[in-house]
Amino acid sequence: MRISIIPCEAGYYRVMTAVGRAEQQELPWVEKYRPKTLDEMVNQDEVVVTLKNILKTRQVPHMLFAGPPGTGKTASAHAFARELYGEGYLEEGLFVEVNASDERGIQTIREKVKNLARSIPFGPIGFRIILLDESDQLTDDAQHAFRRIMEQFSTTCRFILAANYANRIIEPIQSRCAVLRFRPIARELVINHLRKIAGNEDVEVDEKALEAIYDFSEGDMRKAINILQASASISRKVDEKTVYQVLGYVSKGEIRRLLEMGLAGKVKEARDLLREMLYVQGISSSDILTGLYREIPDLNITEQAKVELIDELGELDFRIAEGGTPEIQLLSFLAKIAKKARS
Ligand SMILES: Nc1ncnc2c1ncn2[C@@H]1O[C@H](COP(=O)(O)OP(=O)(O)O)[C@@H](O)[C@H]1O
Ligand SMILES: [Mg+2]
Image 1 (cartoon, rainbow, N blue to C red):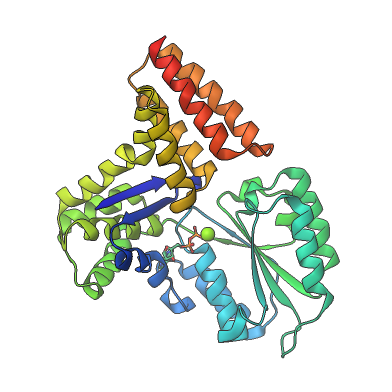
Image 2 (cartoon, rainbow, N blue to C red):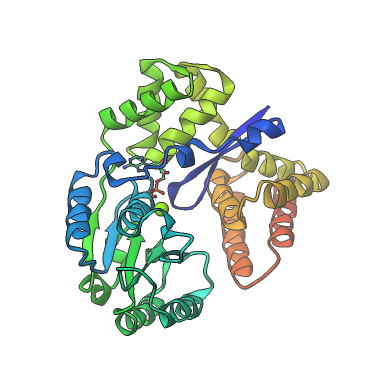
């Protein structure tokens, strides 16, 4: 059995359990326990009150959901839309999610919005909601372009922008939005939530384990639930040791193995693992890059070699962004590590 928690962009962790088929098909608990209604949201009282008031009047402003990862921004946008439009909110295309970091540029978003805005949706509510997730990833220029889209389509569309950092959103957008602030979730509330999930999953977790999970998660519920699930897949009785064992996988995970293979000059093995990560597990090349970036300082090579590798990594990042094939670029990076290790 292999379990790893892979550091992804913006401090997200993705739990990978590669066991039998049955287990792979198990829904990640973060999805299974995603709050469906605003009342199920833990710890975001101010936000919930505001959203409920908006639901009462049905006067929906553009909104900016700002706050750290794993605090319920995406979940509450969905819950809000479900309560506004009803269960079919997604299938009927009344609520559309666009990820700013996936989409290639503002033009794609524009095309999408234009197509959607062309038809006013059926039903009592005459506008759609478009969630622009990770909107702080847009460049300033893209944000200015987006602001014009907001203005142009404001009768047929309302926008919810989700961002980790409100201050990365340009002022003209901020001033057009109601800003709702999400807070890291309090220790007791995270722990209570984990207890409920564990109870439901027939997993025993002791107090120290819960404390350890919280300490690592720092109020990020996604992280906390992921660690709990990874721990539970090691043992149905989770104690502090199990949790540390799981957290150990963060650094000793596949990224680490990749680097070690690179250092040992095992290019073929590195390629196979890389392919598995990219194509079987579906890890994005940018997540692998972020992971490499975090692991390099801990490698057992000279400081000079580390500096050169980080520099190389910057190049790699650029080449992938420019459209280079991620597999080839990453593998060529790993081959360079082998040279550095020998020099
Ligand atoms: N306030 C919350 N209450 C309950 N569960 C939460 C909360 N925030 C996050 N979660 C859990 O973490 C997962 C990810 O939350 P998400 O809304 O995507 O966070 P964000 O968009 O702020 O990064 C959810 O599916 C849910 O399981
Ligand atoms: Mg989100």
